[in-house]
Length: 264
Length: 141
Picture (spheres, rainbow over the protein chains, first blue to last red):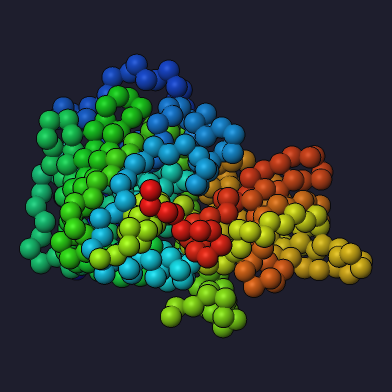
């Protein structure tokens, strides 16, 4: 309970901070600028970023043409090998695929870690010496990453797990554990999932991102992902209340009654 | 021992990022593109997706009511859409998208062309995202 109150207070403070720190309009030429640093000399990730891109500039400059990164057809920066699932887990994913992912928890507004994906939506990073906060527009997900802290010993499991960060040189290493089991939809994990993320701001516009996922109950070996986040000056996060008018579960039920999709 | 195709398929499925908040293929049929022109009757500028309704004249002159899904308002805002300004009841529009799997007058929009100024705006993602059944599964090389 105390932890929840702490999180609420922390978020309130962060929102105040954001209201005073509107990002200034920027341009592609900002590449030559030095990586900003905090008072304690660490790289400062504060700003609005677009995952899964390597194009500098404002949102409009970087996403010309369609106007948004085009799912499935656009230039992809995020790279991930096929997931080394254990046979039982691979079969579960195949079954979900055949059901057209009708059971995907995301369709019911359940959050998940984006792991360097999700370029349709901006992420706002807010950094203090004690914490890095990542606000994800999609589904109003927020991540609180205390810096130089340890996981609590009495963690409750959570869909986003529990994150703590520490610095290795100029790289912020984020350790995530305490995951809630997810056994339906296009991505599954057990409560053994352990994620290590590495954020490195390699220049003014770019964060290199790496993640290693280890799940001894579902994977045969660790799974690696690489991606990038690009600074998007002037972009503001928009409201995305997933529960507002979510018609998909009801539509799924109608389609199942008609025999067009099945949970069997 | 699982067949290689299963392992590859599983890998690709999980490697695919969550572009939409639900599976396209669960609700829509990517093999059934549709282009319709009609008059907008209602716009639901809501999350996690917008919906708009339009009256379309059929071949026999009868008017059919159609419903289309689109991107979330925030995504649309970044590509030039504005609440209660870009698309309003009474506007004549041409919509390209894909039909719902049940064949009802429901579709997922991809692009809207406005008769008033000829402007074309993206309104939704391409077909895909979990389209199990309509697309062959990836084959291991």
